[in-house]
Length: 329
Length: 127
Image 1 (cartoon, rainbow over the protein chains, first blue to last red):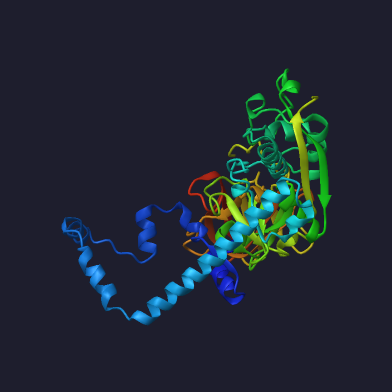
Image 2 (spheres, chains in turn cyan, green):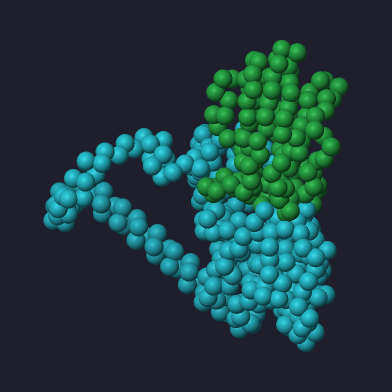
């Protein structure tokens, strides 16, 4: 059998990893009631009904509890919380100031390297990441990763939220459900642009290239592309320009990711995967990524992965596209 | 035979049952019946797209009488392309005389629904 949740959770503890694994995959087929029983919850219908009938607990009792709690520890934790809050506020203000100055040209873009945290879901006063998508059962992650990156760049450069066609990029660009490479996808984006989703809707099986006849006037093209290999270049680009497409190695424990900062702890290598990297955190050393497995996986479809993990920033480069415009204009 | 998902790569065909030099039997997804003798190892190979989140899982408790024992599971990539398919190899040992159905479900581990199910009928004889 593929790896089970107990093995993963043991490995997370032993290796002091900072992520959370979800329920055992084999539980997925159980009903809610069966699941409760597996978890040791014995539901007594009579007790449940009695609870439903009971009057709501009085808030006064809760307040009284706090009043009798020891004062010193509470004050200490309050002080600590306030201190952390003040530091976070200052960091946020500093980040906004650098952002503003960089945007106005008062600071060179290299100054953006000073930033410790970047998340394009909340940058320059807005969300620059399009909704999480689902590639289904087709090996089309390259198209999803590159299309998501292109959509983000349209948001950043034009404040326009577009839904572009992963199907056109994949099936007209020379890819298939059997896998692809980001270099080829980026070349297609530069040479041909990508049409709207409505022009060539996505289904998760191989399809002939069949885009709409007037796509040339509506396709979105990126004039420039970059490929970065060093950590400094990767961070600097994400800071000053925008998200990128990245490739990493998927291991079995990745399916169980439910939150936190992923690092491989257990399970076999299953294949290479492509995603959009939408930010990073230099304090806690991780990349923030948007996956294409639907919003039911991970943290609403997103995940964080530690620097150096699964070769995401070592064996494979980051691919960026920018200078977006309507194709042929 | 259940319908083959069009999104999946071509199933290994013509390999209804073969033996390699070590005597290990191998059956592809095309086959539905595998015959083995006691103490013989056999392998079931299923292809999928694990980087799309989908894996083959052996449904639990399909072999209450212990006709076969699962020895291991491993992945073999079918391509070096990003997002490309891989094969899952499930290895079994025939333990005692009898028949059993092994149910494999193709699903995303965090989702309740499965996309496809394949049933392999195993017949173990004394040989």
